[in-house]
Length: 75
Image: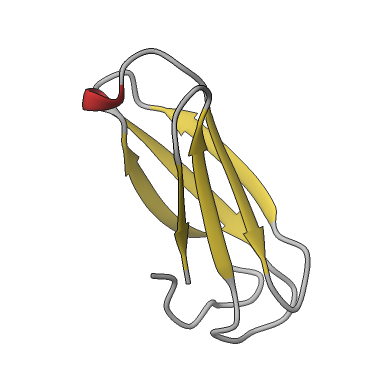
């Protein structure tokens, strides 16, 4: 779940990938403004996702997918 999102600050969350197997992680964030997203593979079983939006609010949703796997949607 994405809580109230701050503007101009980098908000972050981690995606645990260790037990997912090999594949590419994809993340999209939808809401009142476009999100600039940066992902960093920590090489130890998780990926850190940082994003910045230009409008505040709690109407943002994150969709996380794994190539060849299922998607998870956080709202």
